Length: 274
Image (cartoon, one colour):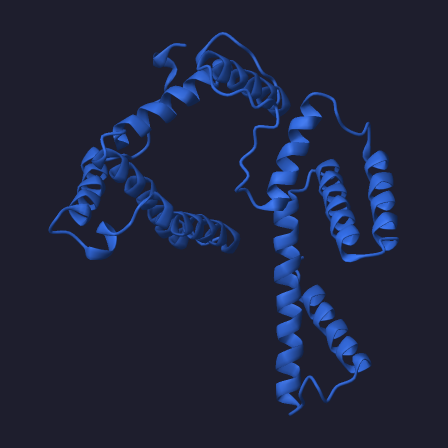
């Protein structure tokens, strides 16, 4: 690894970074904010997660202004956790920065060293191999290839473990094998005789659908988010249509609601780009 391969950074004013760290230290000081002083790592977990989803929402909306704002909120959470650690003498924000910089250089030997990688799959395989060596060198608890964060959203976790399995060849040879597995799991769900069995088979069916998403190079989490938004939009169209006509959900039969649903789909199609 040679540090001289690093390119000149973009705009990064050290004084602004120090200002943020100083603001957080002040908020946590004896004269600081009662709310900030009352927080710990556990209490902040929900806020960190919320801020990450706010970032995703800004990306989905294509709003650079919102993205800039939400990235700042997410960065604040990083500084907050580092401040808590510094107060108990564990680590500081400088240690966090050193850790991630060293890790990125170490895990990109094809950029900062003599290794080579010609495509994203080779990069990911190299990344996993380096992580495995790091675990061995640190004498960390052996957790194997499926060392996956249990706090990940279920769909994201499913796709991640399947990606790991794919890298070692534990996967269907092609898309058709994945389709057959989905059909098999769907049939088993239909044949379930009680709730416990249905829960098990439904999980298997969803897992198989996530595998199929991989073969289409689709992020399963994003696909479901897209469908959720689509459903909400169509549902809102029906609700607005009923309001305009002075109707209620209870006053309409299934055929009327299905017709409004069809209209909502047509409206989407007509408003689609291109």
